[in-house]
Length: 448
Image: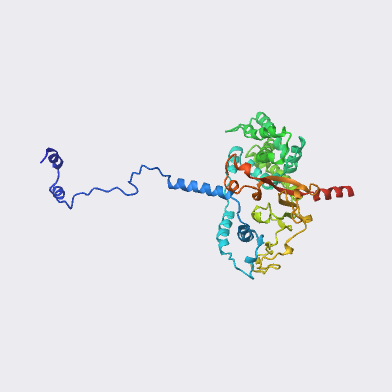
């Protein structure tokens, strides 16, 4: 027996030695796990990384991919829009008279969307504001942002360019924020002066530094010759913050000057000030919102471009309605659902299963407030070049759009840098606005 073996057996009990001598009882080597222990030199991404990459790609597709077929729009998206909002277009396939399509598949998608709409996510910005400026400023900001006409407009605004004088931003600020706007403009010097006189000590970031972003942004865009309301949208929350800070310091001044009892928090004696400002701001904001909105129905028209309509989910609001203009298409166009919760059970009128044209679908072009149209060099009686009629229409937005009929089929199907542009032809896809409203307003002014 080798010396190394003797040393290994020394100190072993008789039972242990017997076990070692029995080949069945000997310890068997542990085989590596085929998945966990296997050392594969080839790199592969982690499962969660794959999930995130796939999710990013799918979100990009959801944001940028087009609706490739009008059948998807009118047979899926439009009924889904009706199920969610009670408004949309109905095709003959969903008519109870024919009922060749089911709503079950749509409900699989509608229910998660409804659930998502019910989810309320806490606002981390509000937490930061309260931490920096105090709860009094935080609750004042809630009022300003909830009721403010500026936030009502900016949250859904879609505005054309304007070139305006310097006073445009001042007037715009007063219309959208009324009393809060001048309070916001004087907030930084007011805070600095108040801290110096009242010996107020602040912790963390100085308040004037927290408000500096609003002044920097205003200094840049107030001095530009090209002025649009949307250029100030990013600082609307800062205007609300600055205005709330000024109200908070007014309360502090009132307590120091007019309140004899210095005990307790200054808000205990001056909360009526913020309440008064909130009520005044609310009344003025509601008045402005009603003047702007007034729930007037807006008619958006499409002619030959009806089949590219992406669905009612893309309309700005419930008061917007899509209508058709007569074009060279001679088939049956979808019809809006009847109003009410039982519209899926009502047999719609003027609908057939032969795809025969229904003239009742069309409106006169004079009823249109806005019009979406592709400006092609060729025109017909029912498909004129609306953008060329400058006395009747104003172009709000114009985007280059591929003219498939005059483009090379290979280079329009596959993009090749510096080459495809030579063989592809683009025309203008336009959003037009009628000039009738302006003419009516002018005639009313002359009448007065």
